[in-house]
Image 1 (cartoon, helix red, strand yellow):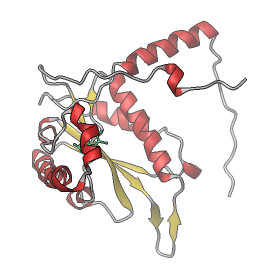
Image 2 (cartoon, rainbow, N blue to C red; image 1 turned 90 degrees about the vertical axis):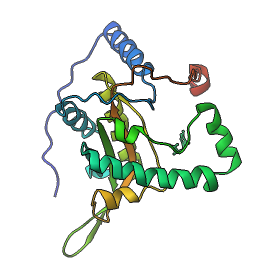
Image 3 (cartoon, protein in one colour; image 1 turned 135 degrees about the horizontal axis):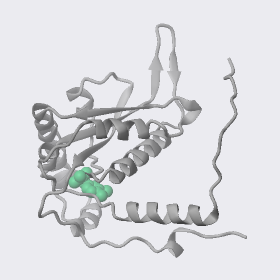
Image 4 (cartoon, rainbow, N blue to C red; image 1 turned 180 degrees about the vertical axis):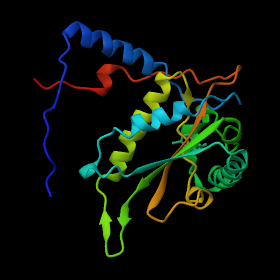
Length: 220
Ligand code: IYR
């Protein structure tokens, strides 16, 4: 089978328009910070639907779109997730993480307490789908981590653009999410993203970003 190929419509921008839009997008994304203090204030779920729809435009290996976004609004499920995450995180912080890792996290002041999992109005749990199982075969997906990562990046940018704040949370191990959310065995939890508004007194560490010169090189 080959797809029907259709003409690609493209609007070419002038340099100044590209530059203006690029700068505006940079300013927007440069304001994004990982937030750990959420307000319980909620918002219309249509914003999340739009963000997920946007994430779903991501490129993926062989266009398999190997992702699923589960939105948790239920206080009971959020609580269940918090309890399971804190159990794993406590074990990690107290026993599993080596001193060097704890040392790298110390300036950020994180610990195993994860109140935000209950306070944020929504949790988006991103699952990556490694393969599809039909009656007769297993159909493998390709570049699943890359695809899910790009989709998640677009999701975060979309949420930022809508004035919402996010945290990319990675409780480890996080297979408890597969159980709690009843996902089939081909779906693996990839990232847990609380979304909402910051608490009034929310604070973030005063970090800096690497200078442009440190993160790129031009070969002419
Ligand atoms: N998952 C733990 C630990 C943690 C690890 C890294 I690397 C971070 O950048 C932040 C936290 C937690 O969420 O606390």
